Amino acid sequence: MDIQWKGNKYTNFSSRQGYVPFVIVNHISVGSMSSMDAWFTSPENRVSSAHFGVSRQGAIHQYVDIERMAWTQGIPDKQIPRATAQVVQKMGVNPNLYAVSIEHEGKVGNLTEAQFEASVWLHRYIQDRIFDQWQRSFPLDTYHVIGHDQVNPSGKPYCPGPQFPWERLYAALGQVDRVKEEQLMEDIRERMAELEKWHEELSGQVRALERLHALPQVPEWASEAVDAAVKQGLVLNPEQSSYDFYRVLTILHRKGLI
Ligand SMILES: [Zn+2]
Image (cartoon, rainbow, N blue to C red; front, side, top):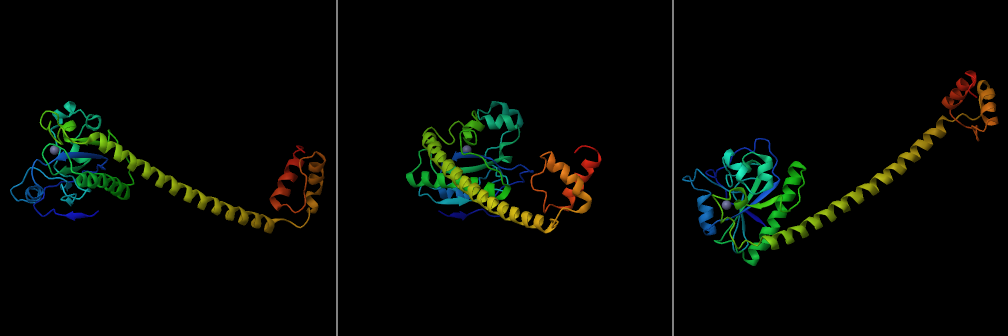
């Protein structure tokens, strides 16, 4: 799949003001793909835009960078409590700030097969891009993937439309999440193996270092303390230990502890 860039200097966008996107909002364009392209690039349009559009043939067009905020599902603050999407209520700010939007060419929400496939691919692409850009990971579930009608139930009750294939979409996106999870697990396993190898090498080096610091025999000044420690069964092999080890034994002995 590939994405064709269609945005131009007239395409509306604003700053995300520091918000990292983690919600995908689905829409229906109620018009053709060419009218969508024309409207989102028109100097006459001072009201709306979207990040992506998916045609009935399965072509994907992009108008706004996901780093930027598109004007697709904004609502005034006072309308936020009326949203039916939990995430919108919880966030309590303009949903455009933290959402990525997908328009679908069509009227009532029934997607063609090619369009459905492209949309599933695009959801995953957005999830990956957000991870690459901000290292933020979110599942493609009912909390994070919503419709415009859940943001604005009174103003946009028919977006993405009564025939939008929600159940099928979530099932397909659930598969995507499982594939993603397996990939992450595989990454973790590889990194664990690397860590183990590294740990082994390091232990070898530590042992070599210890051998370098070992004294060939028990030094005179420590012999009394070492004998006492051996008698008490505290030390089994007193030979070839380090200077610090003999010093500690001697101090303990002088303090009458061994
Ligand atoms: Zn919409």
